[in-house]
Amino acid sequence: MASSYQIKSDRLMSTLSSILLRASAIFILTLTVKVGFNLTQIIKVVPVEAAPNEPIPNPTLIPTTTVDADVTPLPPTSTSLPASTPAPASTPMPIPSHPHLIAGDDGVYVHTGPGLSYDKIGLLLPGVETTIVGFNRDWWAVEINGERGWVFRDIVTAFQADEVPVLTAPRVPTIEPPADQTPAPVWAIDEDHWIDVDLSEQRLTAYEAQNPVKTYLVSTGLPQTPTPIGQYRIWIKMKTDDMAGADYYIKDVPWVMYFFEGYGLHGVTWHGNFGHPMSHGCVNQPSDMAEWLFNFADVGTLVNIHE
Image 1 (cartoon, one colour):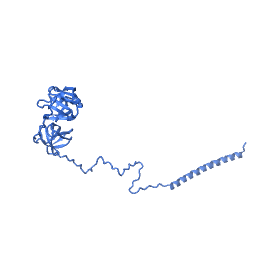
Image 2: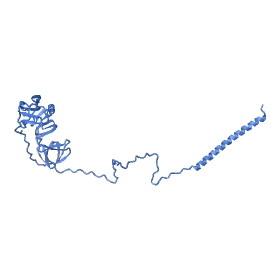
Image 3: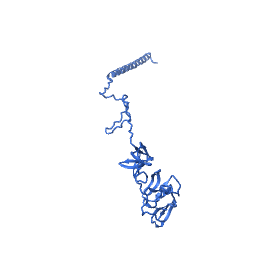
Image 4: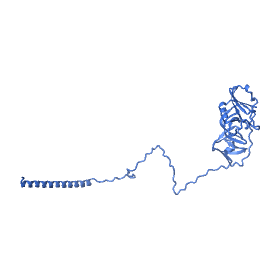
């Protein structure tokens, strides 16, 4: 058995150890508080002063892209006027006080006289304005670059033209064929490919040498507007052309081949009475046949027209 002395000694040591641990904890806590207080005295927040006329940077703003000095900025899409400044009133365009016309969306050809039998001297472009100096039947006389021309009145818009005078038309180009352009019988024609028009039969025949390759009914000129008789050669081909006269105007006539002045072979869309005279002198054809003939013939192809 342990002696009572030994027991008392153990209790004393235990009590001392406990006291020492508590004293150490108090010392460490006190030291920590003191060090923290000293740090707050040493570390101070120093405010940043902005340079004169320079804003304090804001970390939430994204800077804009720098513009190159050589790049011209786009103008603003709109300009706001000050509230005290009224917006300027728009100035109306002056309206010409003289007779004038404006060409339509497709423009209009200008001829040397009031009719398609007169030569073309130019094209009045869409929206172009020109002065009216007179009229003759369905044609306006105009002044263009110091030269008189004529345009068909139904395809232009005229203004203040009620008082313009009636003008005498220039001499109509002759429709008589030259004396040496008389027609020839089929057997006497020596051509690689050519066209024969029989007015009595109202029939067109396309030939290669002496061999007919296609024949069909056509409509030639009425008695008061006959198709000229003779031998001619196609001088121009046009997929479409406008045709007009004293009492008609037809746009976009298809598959046109002129063989003598304003007379031509062409397709029609306004009648189907082939085999009978119907025209103002041209040779009317069904449009599909006119397209075929357009591809068959060339500029210079012979056209032999006879009764």
